[in-house]
Length: 64
Image (cartoon, rainbow, N blue to C red; front, side, top):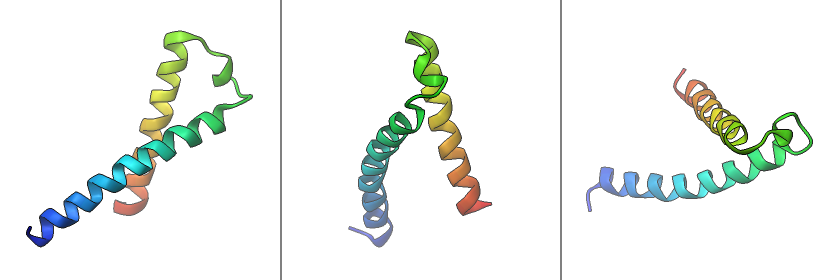
């Protein structure tokens, strides 16, 4: 395996782990907030928005 393929493989493994942790931390962060009171699609849309915002902010932090 080439060096770049190996680095990409490692990154893919880390993405799976970070994604799991991100979902867990978002659930913890929205507990007892206005988001926690939302229902169905509104709740899912809010979680999606938060997830995308976190990824965007991390991207800015490391590539900004």
